[in-house]
Length: 173
Image 1 (cartoon, rainbow, N blue to C red):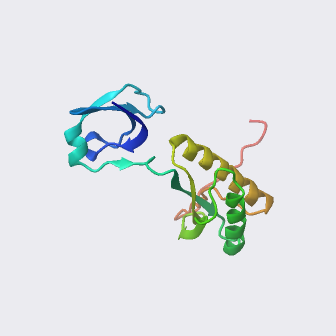
Image 2 (spheres, rainbow, N blue to C red):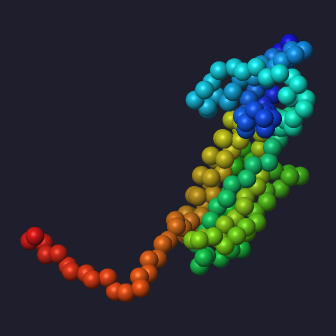
Image 3 (cartoon, rainbow, N blue to C red):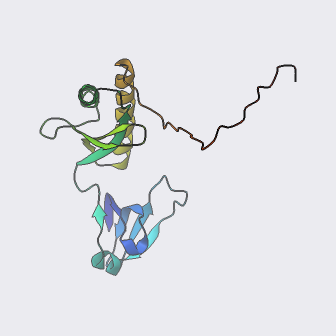
């Protein structure tokens, strides 16, 4: 019997594989692997494994919470950046607002940035999540750029115990 496009994550004994159930039968179930994987062939799972192990069904509900991490430079105003990020995320069409607000928390002091955890609700299908992440990342980047807030790349400072000899090379050589 057909099971419909209910995506799930396989039990730990099968590895962390994402799949969509395509047919459920009495003894075994047929699943289609995630289309983004290089191996895209159906696989059969004995139902005993599904009954005895945890299974996460990611598309059971219409909405799913999604999270990204975004860092700002240490010399930027954290509260101002939080407000700019919040407005940018709420303006995205793929973000579900209303009773489930966008959540933005300063998460950590990282090597080159103060990192924010940005969480919002969107559709539960894998393509909904990818589209929403794409839209949110673009909107946040654009908003921070427009406000002049730096998203830093990792800075590395090298120190040496003793001076390093340096001889300039002339252009004629």
